[in-house]
Structures are given as structure tokens and as C-alpha cells.
Image 1 (spheres, each protein chain N blue to C red):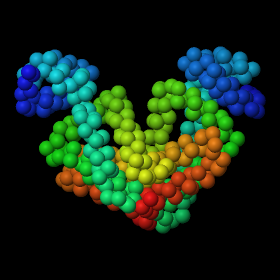
Image 2 (image 1 turned 30 degrees about the vertical axis):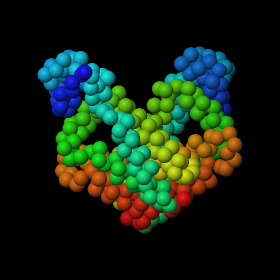
Image 3 (image 1 turned 90 degrees about the vertical axis):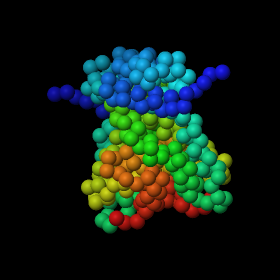
Image 4 (image 1 turned 135 degrees about the horizontal axis):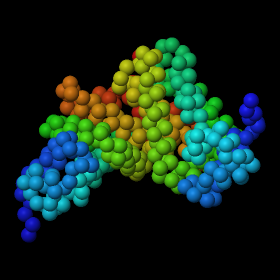
Length: 189
Length: 189
């Protein structure tokens, strides 16, 4: 039986990020990350497929958070209300204790075009998945695509605000505020 | 004095697209395009910087269409009303006689990930430019970013509908319909 030492995954993530920031993502090797976290390379590969996956952990759970929110949204709500439920459900993925890690991660991604592209692909995949979940709840196109894309836009804008140095609101609160701004776009400034 | 034979640019665009569809974008050479259009390579390069630019002509004018709409939108309108003016202004860029060309272009781009990425970048650049124009009209963040991104989403969804084989509405009409759908997302289906 393989034993998973508690905290190993988090230790690997922290060690990797610090190396990516200091040495550059391309320059860092899995051997360095493992050594820095005090484990073997084999242990690294028990937790992550490669060094890029450290930056994109739990893609399945991330998307599932959104989809679960749509599946559980009350009947008879508007498409945007369902999207609001999805955003609220996914906010659990970004607790305050991930704040510092997420800020560092953003700096690594900003410095590397291939990682930016990967991040963009993640959001495109999320939009497609959300549109599919909305269709299952009876929302037709183009409303399903528009609502899904609007949800991703709110998430994206809220996430950037959450990462700002001076920001103090919890992520769930920022998302609610940005969603409210979205529905206010038809009012004169 | 260099004489520009009328229609040369359009003939080059048509010849290029037909070659891209038949031979593949990567496989086609500028020499083939020029020969197929009955001109020299030098003439090709008077009109386009490279074979990719044939698929992304007039990026400046394209963006300018949107920005001009925002600059000329009536005072006191909502951010989304300004975006609506931008979309209407840009619709002139897609007259019915570009329909068939645009459909072929979409098939070429769909077959080539690097071209898809270029198309995606074009839309990202458009969103940034729109947000900047909205800020100049007094719209603050995050409303400026949200409205700009919503405008790009409407354009993108409307453009995909316009390209559908069975579609008969003019592009301007489709954009208006999609924009109306966007503002209806807060209503129950």
C-alpha cells in the first residue's frame, strides 16, 4: 500500500512555485522541486503528471464546482441566476488560505505565454461546460452560450480583483459584486 | 507611380482562400497564390505582408469600426448602449457580399490551431480596446471591462450564427438579436 504523507502535495506546490518564481518555469526541473520539498521524484509523480500540472491542479474539481452549482440551482430561475449559483458554488475552491499561493501562481503564468494560453484554454473549456449544463436545465442557445460566457467573464474579472495586493474582500463577495455590476450595465453611468 | 489594378486585392484573397481550402494553409505558398490570381509575387506583397494576413485583413479598420461607434454613441447612455453602438458601427465591416468568403475563411481557421489562436488574440485585443474606449467615455472598472467583454461575446456569437449555412438574417440584425438575448438573461426561461 502506498502511503501519502499528509501535506506532501501542498509542500510540493509551494516548493515548485518558489522555484518557478526564482529560476523561471522553463528552467526548473522536477528533480529540483522534489529535492526542495524533501521527497523523491517518484513521490512528485504520484501527485502531479508534470511540472505544469502543479499550476493547474484539480481541473476536474474546479469545473465540477461550477457545474454542481448549476445542477442544484432552484427551478424557474433565470439563466443568469443559475450562473450566479455556479459562481457561488465554485468560490469554495478559492479560500483565503490559497490567496498568497494564487498571487504567486499568477505571476508565474504572466511571465510565460504558453502558460497563459493554457489558462485561456481552461476558461474556454469552462465556458463550454457551463453552456452544456445550462442546456440540460432547459436554457436554449444563444442564451446558454451567452450566460456561460458571461459567467466566465465574471469569474475572470473577479479573480483578477481578488489577486490585487490591496484587495481584502473574500472571493465569493467579489464575485457577487462583479455579477451585480454586470446586471447593472444597462443603467447609465 | 505604382498602379493598383482595381480588384487585385479581392482576387488575391479569393485565390488564397481556395488554395488554403484545397491544399491546406501550411502547404500553400505565396508564389502559388500570386500565380493563381494572375499577378507577380511582388504584387502580392504590395497588398499583404504574408499569407496569414490574407485571412486577417484590415485589423485596424475592424477595431476602428467598434471604437468609432463608442466615440459617437449618444451622451448619457448606459455602458451596454455604448457597446450596442459599437456593434452596429462594426457591422458595416460584414456586408452580405463577404458572407461566402467569411464562411470559407472560418473553415480554413478551424483546420489550423495556430490560426485559431490568432483569431482568439484578435478578439482579446478588441476587448482591451473597447474597455479603453469606454473608460474615455466615463465608464469605470469593472463595468468597462465587463461591458467590453460582453460586446466581444455578442460579436463572437453573432458571427458564428451569421456563418451558419441556413442563416439568412443580415449580420447587423443578428447582432441586435443576440444583444437583446444578453439583456434578457436575467429573465426566467
